[in-house]
Amino acid sequence: MKLKYDVGDKPLWAQLFDILLDRIVSKEYNAGDKMPTDLEIMQEFDVSRMTVRQAMNKLINEGYIERRRGKGTIVLEKENKVETILKSSFNGVLEKNDIKNRRVLNVEMVNAGQEIADFFNITTKDKVLRLVREIRINNMVVSIHETFLNPTIVPLDEQGDYSGSLYEKLMGAGYGISNVKEKISARLMNQKQKELFEIKGDEAMINRQRRGFCHDFPVEFTNSMYLSQGYELIIDLCE
Image 1 (cartoon, rainbow, N blue to C red):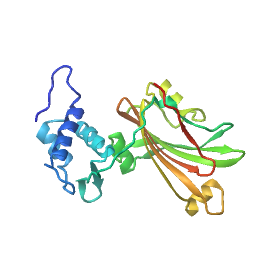
Image 2: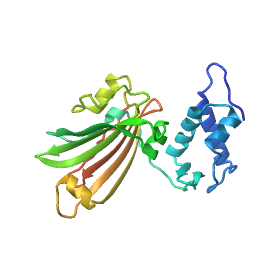
Image 3: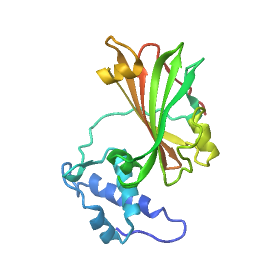
Image 4: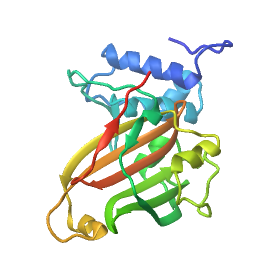
């Protein structure tokens, strides 16, 4: 299968994604197999490294492959399971959190970790904006949010004011979030997390990992921690 370059065809990275996915689904690449390297794919299809990384990252985000340190990129076993997907406008997902006090703890440019670099299609040598904020209710820390913003498409820096709504700021910069992928889990806090939340006893917390996109372009990667007690996520589905 070859890439098409005619006007109106899919972007090259999307075509490449389709080809690689077809090879996985058809068992040309079996679960546990090592995928071709980025360089090998570049040479086979005569495309740039950025095109390859975009296609590979979409496969990673959809759970078909995984990068493993020292082993390369491995095809994953897809579980036979039924997933329930709730689709709504992004603005229909609201967190019930009245009378809140948002506080910016840290804003800095840092080197991207491997997971962040893969998501943003950059290298670990590139700098990304890291933003850490907390929300208090009645002077009690109820949530902590660590956000990384894509440096290649988001014209924001560490000098900006991030005390308000981050999504309104992104929209004002021309990169409003149009869709998100979230993974939600629960666990007991470790000692460091207890210190962050200023509590001493055992406490459960909710973890949310959110990946925000502006029309398929990765914009933000956020890890959030919430006190489980009193936390509510209200989903309002609208046409």
